[in-house]
Image 1 (cartoon, rainbow, N blue to C red):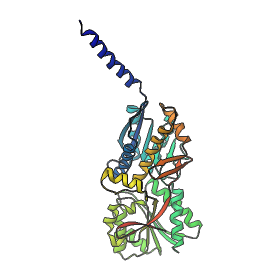
Image 2 (image 1 turned 120 degrees about the horizontal axis):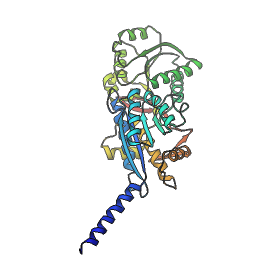
Image 3 (image 1 turned 180 degrees about the horizontal axis):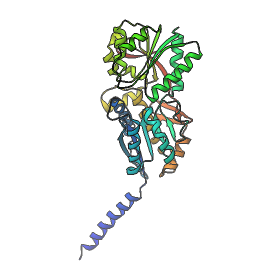
Image 4 (image 1 turned 120 degrees about the vertical axis):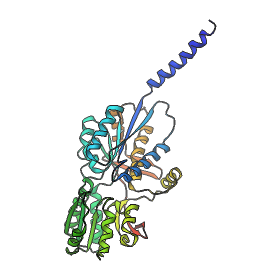
Length: 362
C-alpha cells in the first residue's frame, strides 16, 4: 500500500502533460508542390527553400505548435485540387503554399470558399485579383512581360517570334509581353503554342526562320526549352533568344549545349543574397538554387515571421489571415522585402547565360 501515493503522483504527472499537450494550440502549414511529374525539379527546388525556412525558424514554441504537411500536385490542376481537399479534410491546415500558376489558379476557388490563405509561387496576372485570400510570392507577369519587352526594344529588336507553352503562367507572360511590346513599337511576327506532348519541332523552326523575326522568345518549360534552343542554332538561326526562368535551369543548359544557349537573356528574381546562399549551402552542401527556391523560402518565412511577431499567439485560421493582411514587410536573412496588396515585391534583374552560367547584366 505504501507505493500507491507514488503511483498516483505518476499518473497525475502523465495526465497533466497529456492535458497540456491537448490544450496546446496547433498551426498546420501545408506545402503543395510538384514532387513528381515532368517538372519535379521545380518541386524539389521549392521544398529545399521551404525546409531551409523551417530550419532557420526551428525553435521551441511555448504556446504554439507548428506542424508541416507535404502534398504532391504533380504540377496538375486537378491533382492539386484533390490534394488540397485532402490537406483540409485530414489535417485541417491553416495556410497552404503552392507552386505553379495552373495549380494556383485552380486552387483559388477553394481558397476563397474555405477562407484559407493561399501563398502562391504564381505569376499569373489575375491570381490575387480573383481571390482575396491569395498572396503572391513570384513576380507578376504584369511586371515580367513589360520588362522583357523593354529589354528587347532597347536592343533594337522590333520583330519578335514567340513560342509559348499551353500553361497558365506562360500564356499570361506572353499576353503581358505582347501587350507591352506592340504598344511601344514592337511587332509579333510569329506566335505559336505548344503542349507538353508536342515533339516535332522541325516545321515550327522552318516557320520561325521564314517569319523575318530578329529575336525569339522561347517561353516554354523544361521539356522543350533546351531542345528547341539547340535545334534553332543547328538550323542556323542566330537571332537573339529570350526566355523565362526555365532558360537558366541546368537541364536546359545541358540539353541546349553551351554554345547554342550562349547569350540567352531572361529576367528573374535577384538571387544575389549572400546570407541566404551561405545558409543554403550549409544545409544542402550545394548552391544550385533558382527563383523557385527563394520564393518558397520567402513564402514560409512570411508565415513564420508573422506568427513570431504577433503579440498574442495565433490559434485559428481567421486570425492568421488577418495577421498576414497586416504584414507589410518580410524579414529575410538579407534584409526585408515589402509586401504590398498581398504581393511580395521582389526586385527583378536581367541575366544572360555565358559559358553555361547565369551572369547578371545591366
